[in-house]
Length: 322
Image 1 (cartoon, rainbow, N blue to C red):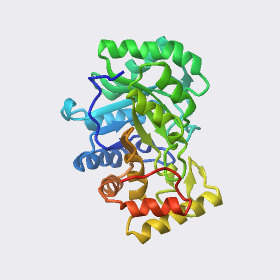
Image 2: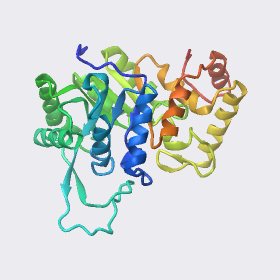
Image 3: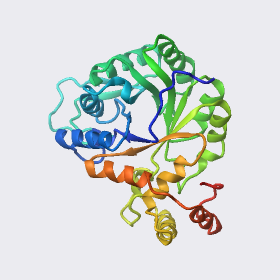
């Protein structure tokens, strides 16, 4: 069902995991500069989560946006992981889930109504904002029943009350989001890594279902965590070392892109934005230079002949883009 209060999104969004110190530390000044550069380059959609740096990303994004006109940007965060303080934490202990931050909190999965309400309340405190535009249930892979039966009704109530403007689910798989699209009245799906130049599994079921039901899709991970940004032997694919066959496939795609004078990064962004179900593409940004580069890449025109050659060579199996 169409939600008339669904916020207008910029076609490019700021993914906040990197400034939560994902795979390496970013200091406060650099994180603020990254958000400011994204704003200066026209990005008006900012995504974060409690999971990202044990609340660090939310605090940094909230601080960077707090003095900007609230109606001028869209802010999304996520529910499903409650952050609980660790008793007498060891200052030397670091987070074990990929973020270079002190292990001062532990994550507890919770998709209950109580957990959803607590998560939203605590996110608002960290962000320092009075409302959230989009709230996603974050990775409920192992908690599907609880998320459907308890978490979703709680989010629906918060939407009705105006605490959040839109609700959805964010995952790096397609089957569970497709269930939410068909069985609930969510507004949006955040799909990470499953509709890219290397993995079009989202096109098999989820994207057509979303298009049919009027559910927007936000794409994350269009570079598959790095391989489509810089294809090389040491690149990562979905945050793991990239298999050699995928490295070669990315290099083959890059060679076709080079033939048409198109950077691979530009093709990766354009591919996602071309699907009619897709409302925005999130890109992970940790520096002002990355923010400017992503905006520049999103502005590159990709000729139809490039997509045709990728299909002819069996490097991309999805239909026409223009």
